[in-house]
Image (tube, rainbow, N blue to C red):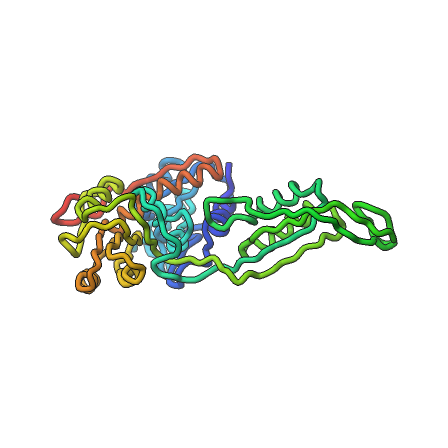
Amino acid sequence: MVKISDIINYLEYSFTDISAQSKWDFSGKQIYTGDREISKIALSLDAKEDIIEKAVKEGCGLLITHHPIFFRESKGININKAVDRKVIKAIKGGLDILSYHTNLDMVYNGLNDYICELLNAKMDNGFLSYEGSHSLYKVAVFVPYDYKDEVFNAMTANGAGSIYGNYSSCGFIAEGAGLFIPDDKAKPFIGSANELQIVDEVKIETVVLKKHLHKVIHAMLEAHPYEEAAYDIIELHNKLDYGFGKTASLNKEYSLQEFIKLIQEKLNIKHITTNMHDIKPFSRFGVCTGSGASLWKDALNKGVNVLLTGDLKYHDALDAYEAGVCIIDATHQATEEIYMHRLSEIIKKQFNIEVVVLKQEKQLICWGGNN
């Protein structure tokens, strides 16, 4: 059994940072009836009525979606409104709902990263559209040599040494000697009152995101054997940036038709719209899952003239065409729904809980194509 609060803390403060969501977004608790233990979780792109019914039928206590039910404050409950009917069905069925939208778009190992992985493309550093940054701190602490592992493990278990990348438990250890004189009121772990002590110590240095700083320091002091631990906290000038979209490089040059076939195969989609018929072979492209066609200028500024996204609008298509940027619309749904399988794997691994992915029975149909 896992508590809903454990899921919330992980998805909002460890795997993603909910503070990074766009101002217009409403990620987080959609329907929350209080903390409780659950044994099964459902994932879906949207909290449609049929998805809620399936989740309840399958005995799930929690539904996690990418798109929120609410994009604005509710002023009341009306059974004649689709959104309100969903709320009633969920509460009656004992189903809480969490949604993680733009913060999940911008996180490391998020939607754009997964699309690049599926296409066997190597991502560049940075984003198509920079949205903000998280503050970073360096924490240094002096520890007796024999306690270095215990203190370091306590710090990394609470978020230190991992900055949304392929490496964790990152740090630096330097050996040296610690000097101190305890007074008559001290209760030293090592040494005697009023005598100079010289102790074999190490200096542990690691990097911590601001959101983890308080709990890292608390865990460090709890694990430290000294009555008074010596440590430094230094705010760094370098930050952890976040934003929408990525640029990436394919393993070879593709023609437009070859790339479209690759997308169709990996995303399991037939209908794709483009604003160009053909272009020169290319190896670099931009990607922004969901509704990202407006980022074509950002793609061009990053030196790429192919953008994979969804929700292509006429004027974006026309303006991009005239600027020499090919926009590939693989649909909002297809570019995002596929990520629910990756998120289910992440949650299963983290909590050892049963997770089911629920696909929408009726897909949105693009007339003139077979979606």
